[in-house]
Structure formats: C-alpha cells, structure tokens
Image 1 (cartoon, one colour):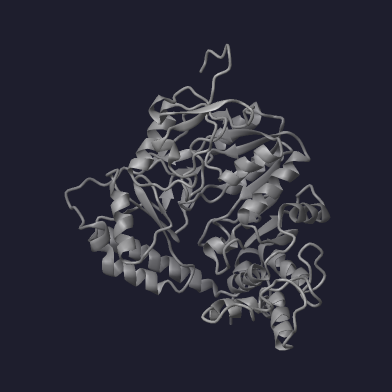
Image 2 (cartoon, helix red, strand yellow):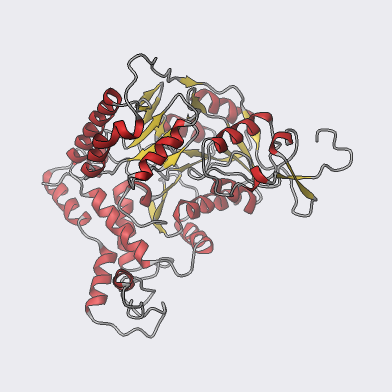
Length: 506
C-alpha cells in the first residue's frame, strides 16, 4: 500500500481507514481529468490560442500538436486560476492538504512571480525588508519595483568554495535587534547548492518580534520526508514560494505559493495580487504539470526517498574513492546538504570549467559551473541513468584520484561583515559611463552583473563597487562562469554613475 510522504510528516497517528481515504484523494488529478474529458469530446475551437487545439502546427511538429490539445484557456469545465471554483480549486486544495498550508495557489511565472507577490504584500505592511546576501535577483527586482528598503543579512559560507550555507541564529538575532522596523524577513532555503539550516529556530525569532517570515524555497518543493530538511510551511513560515519544476516532474515556470497558518493576509488579497503580477492567460500545460507533480510527490512510497538517498550516498563514496571528484559534505556545522544536490569541488581554480567541458562532450549538462565547483542535480526518483553515467565516466571527467593530495578542508566560515543596505537611491536620469572593471573600485554601479545560474547578483545597480567585487567577478570570468547579463562589462567596462559635484567618495 502506498504510504504518503505527507502522512509521514504530519499524520503519523492516522488509522488505516484515514490513510486509505487520503491515498485515494491524492491519486486524483482534478485539472488533468478535466482536460482529458474536454479533449475526449473532440472540441471545435472558436477561441484562443490560435493553434486551435494543436491542429495548426505544421507537419513534422507532432510533439507541439499533441501539447496543443492541452494548451487550453478559461472555457466551460476548465475553471479560472484567478477565480477557481472547479478543478483548479480542487487541485489547489489538494496541494494545500499535502503541505499543511492555510491555502496554496498555482504559479505559472516561476518562483520569480511568487517572490514579487511576497514583496508586494510586504509593501502593504511597511518599508523595510531583511534579505539574505545570497537572495535571487527576483528579490532585488521586487525591492526596486515596490519601493522597499532592503537590507542584506550576511550568511555563513563554506571557506574553500565560498558557497553560501545560510543565516546563523546569532547573526539573525543581531539583525532583528538593529532593525526593529523590519516588516518582513525573506530567507533562501535551501541554498542553490542545497544547504539548509535550522529554519524553525529562525522562524520563531522572527515571529517573536511580530515580523512576517517569508521563504524563497525554490529548490525545496521535495522536502517532504524525514530524511530531508524540514520544508518551510512545517517550520512555521507565513508565506513560502516553491519552484515545483526545479526538483519535481513539472514543466518549467511551474511553481507554488503557500500561505502559512499565521499569514496576515486574506486569501482573496493574495489571489488578487497573483492576478496583478502574472499573465491573464496562465498556461494550462504548466498547471496540468503542477497537478501531476503534486500527485506524484504525495503518492511516493516513503521508502523511495530513503532508498534513493542511500544510493546517492554510495555514489558519492564511489566517486571519491575512484576519481578526483570531491563532493561537499552532507553536514557542515548546523547546515545539511540536500543529498539530491552534488556540488563537486576542485582546489584548482580552472578545473571546474574543464569538468563542464568533459561533461558536455558526453552530452551531459551540469546545473551550474562556479569558479571551483560544478553542481549536479540528481533525480528525485528513477535516477539509475544518471548514476550509471557517473559510475562509467567519473575518471574520464574528473580525473584519477590523487592518493597523495591532502583532503580539502571544508568548514563553515562565519560571517565577518554584518549587513549592508541594498536599496540605494539611484536614477536613470543620472549620467553614466563605462570604466575598466579593474579601475571601478569606489564607483557606483549603474548595472547589475549576475552569474546565471544561480541568478544571485554579485553587483547590482546602486552598489558601491569594492575591490572584493572586482576580484570575485574577474576570477569567475576567468573560470568560464556564465553571466545572464552578458560579458560587456569585461570587454567594454562596467557601467557606473558619473560622480556628482562634491561627491568625494567617488
């Protein structure tokens, strides 16, 4: 009998009849069932989209033709995302039941849309928001769009790689004391490389001061097993955004937003904001995949996760014993790494670019290449293909193990700085010019420079450029890191604001 992961976390005391009822409920896919029923009627479309149920896609595009049958709009029987009364309402209620939220809604604009919703809601409560140093660029965009004052809270890092790990209790406590006018604290949980700290402790600190706790949990939608870190709703967050497409079988841009039990907003308000910040024509293909992802996750046998994690742990040991691959530890102080994320590290600065090239030579593509590591994201289940590939090609990709090499000294490097303002007053009317990055120290950037992935800006518009920024950016560029904003800053210089008269700091 299928054992729901949700029951493992929340309903261990259920009797057998309750479990059976829950299984039957989560085996349903209300939106998918509605789409299937609609398509079985051989409908004639006098409505958008213009491909007319896929019929107008040219020959040779059979995949698009098939997808077009599911790419529908708000017609009878298929409900309306922004006023759900039928299958979408039921699908979202099942999602809420799975995570234990007060309410959950589908997002078709990814976690980016969800983060903007969170920040708009914050702007209704006050002006100041605390965010982690490793926040996604969409958080910074939201600060700018809604006129919020943002303050970076520094994070603990791993000293060899500089990979962010999370905010410590001590750092957060001091930040909250120094910024009592904060209305919302936004956490990134887990980090891009999969590290998660004791989130409930941090949530309790925020709640004790009457502030709103929000979590960008883009990479943690699968945290539904005791073998994995707690997910943010179970830790007591007020509002949580998850990218279902990151780790679950959902289409790109498929995401969820959850309201916690103590969220200060009415559900109608959140749905209204969702409508303001997303397309008025949400993709039924994406929403159908969200319906499927929820059902798949809910109906996984509880042993699938633990067995899969055990297999990946064996794989890590094999990679370490047979090749030069070094995987970052699963435990670093109070931080735990998601075992589905494998950050493979080198002590040599340029080695990660070589590894990426070797992977791509074999038509295998890593999630991320940093200055000193590549990140491999493993499947939630049915990961035999990826495991066999790494077992077969590890030495060719990562090189032979060097028995005389000293092990890398992985350890938590506590924060040295505290926090910095990220919402400085800038204006598009100010005069700008380009200057060689090597000479930009002390100047104010007029552009945002973002390695992607992970989409965490190193420099943003309004940042006072430091020597550390310069060294980090140049090292990343030398190592072959890709930048979402292109590399014009390296060839033509970084765009900066021209100092105003009397500005001695520039």
